[in-house]
Length: 223
Length: 130
Picture 1 (cartoon, chains in turn blue, yellow):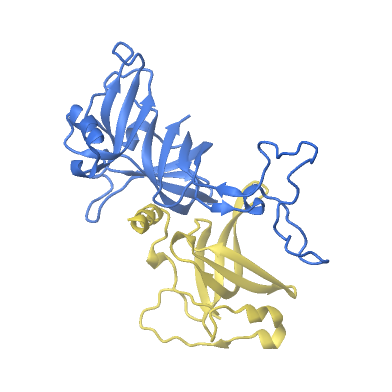
Picture 2 (cartoon, chains in turn yellow, orange; picture 1 turned 180 degrees about the vertical axis):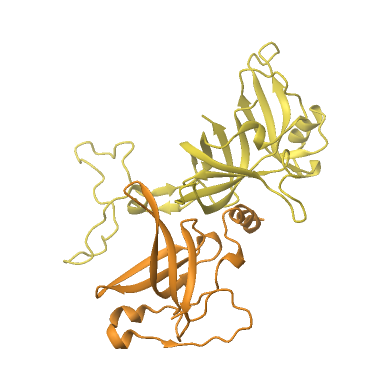
């Protein structure tokens, strides 16, 4: 089976463990993912991988090249997100298969989460690198949050990697070793949990924080 | 969608509404609290005045204040925690604030609250058992 899945961050919540301790968790709406393509080492691709799509979307909302990808796979609808996972074996995985989170993950598993951090725009050195800044009083003028020196003067240039103000956030961040503490199928009103088990989106709860804003895309992988 | 998903998740951990007595800020309550002491688990009763209720959903907490050997002690309990076994209302009080922080500055006679007699047809919990 594929080593990971695509999902959407719901937000943070809390739960109680068996001892009654409060556990802070991030909830993620996980999958389902549809297999769009399978690559095999015997074929022309020379490696084994599975391409999966997440969040189906009408064909006419996609670009022509992307429409071609889904049409070639013989799928009726396209997907907002397409992602490839490397696998050891592609046995039993066929194009069009819908993979639910229960087939990939289980509780108490350690996972790795890839997301896009919250964008903070052009941030100063204090926020971006945790610089201390200067005093607010004692004769200080207009220098309270400035980064101060750019380095030695003999070199007559600023060295590469010198920390200063600049764009912060909105970058890919990977957080490893997160524990998946709970997972359950999501259900619509009027449905019961058991009815929707299998292919519907799952809610997975991961201990701790996950990069990105609410409703942002995250990729969860087994470790 | 987002709110709904969180509700779905929290529902499994929430206590049933009928299991939680409807206590208000200012009420004198008894909290049966499970604690682990020396590797053993036992129930400790903490009796005091509710000075704060905050939060909604699974994260709701309430703070109980009591004076123990002339030292003010406050404990904040998560309302839905399985360790909070039972909350019993001892008596209701007449209060005009949602947060009774002013009690921290008072002691003795001035820290008393006026009793509120509640007349209700069906009251599950024991009413003014003093």
